[in-house]
Length: 536
Ligand code: NAD
Image (cartoon, rainbow, N blue to C red; front, side, top):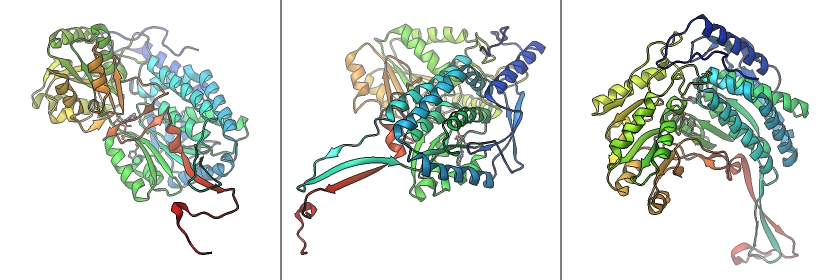
């Protein structure tokens, strides 16, 4: 089923629209809500059964595009958290005993259910978060992909057999389920990041309690509804998957301090990660921290210009600059600096800004007024710190009655300017010139964050240098593609203030399990390691 508008409500330059837009919005919302089992008023806690909440704290979810009220969710109170956590703990005792390939079979069915709900869930992501529909659908595809990956992984949770130094002994490693894993997610990937964690945690035999962003509560409710149905059909104990919608400062803090939770996987700002790292570290728990980025793309003189332009354009403008891997800095070789920027500005002039559910839109709104204020502050700071605005720089006149749309912006500025050293979660691209690759790599690494990076070059030597120990210091380094749009097969995450965590593919499943070394003496004699002799 299509959830797109029947008439295209997008324009460039954008215009406010009237009753037609409102009618479409109501119709689309109704269909999306119906197909995903959402209601206009819901409790914010779920431990595998009905939605509930005992508190009074009501959260309003509003479309960032129109400001229309999507619904009201009563946030989870402490007692509700406790109910969900206890369900998770009880479910763990039974779920860990289910053979891993059978857990994988359940995750396969989750992937199938997501395939069936892809259109509705992708449209909901677009409606509630504001990314354009193709990206909303792409996010659901990422969930499907990680489910497929996890199914295969469920038969490969293996450890090595090791050679013992003692005669007639065998050593091996086993991986056991860990417990109830806490997942905290950011607004900008309101469904995929949870799936990256949950699909792997479940095949590993863990249960999960998810605290989603309060900016995208319906996305979380929809996901939980989908898995509840699958888990019930498989007679799994309630509580394998739990959700608590609540404030970071209350429910979030309760979750991270909870000693029953051996692992907290948290995605969000560096500020939030520093707090979570400190609290979980103080109780010697484990964390996976996926935090802010400040990603640069190096454009070398030999680059394939059309490819580099396309990647820079999507990297900086896609998702309205609200990806952790968005391209924030462009380092351009001085010999092509003017040509490249002239062509990039031409592309910027073609950007269609508007309703993210409309077919022709390239860029939707920022998530809320706070994000717009951060955009304005960053542009003002850049100006004050010597930056020159090459494109954009302004907030658009209210569209659909909302002041959440901004112009994609290009600013020429020094890498050392304080504003460039910070991640502003908006479509602002800082551009700078370089002369030698050494200089470019030094500039590239000279920020506190270390998530994603890329170089466009046709020189094998430059590419290899960028990927070498002396090249990019990021967790992700690409050649001849952009900084954003990672695949689920690779480990995802970054260094420095990005937090050091890795999620999704490769061998990331190990973080969700308890590693155990076993030594078995199958001979008749006791042998001490290292040749130690002890009487008796
Ligand atoms: P945020 O830090 O404001 O919030 C993220 C989550 O943390 C929310 O669920 C929030 O409620 C929760 N939280 C906040 N304080 C908490 C506390 N004290 N205890 C427990 N939970 C708490 O981030 P945001 O604005 O939602 O998302 C944008 C940020 O996320 C950007 O910095 C972006 O780069 C980052 N991000 C990183 C990745 C990655 O994989 N590295 C992916 C997506 C987003």
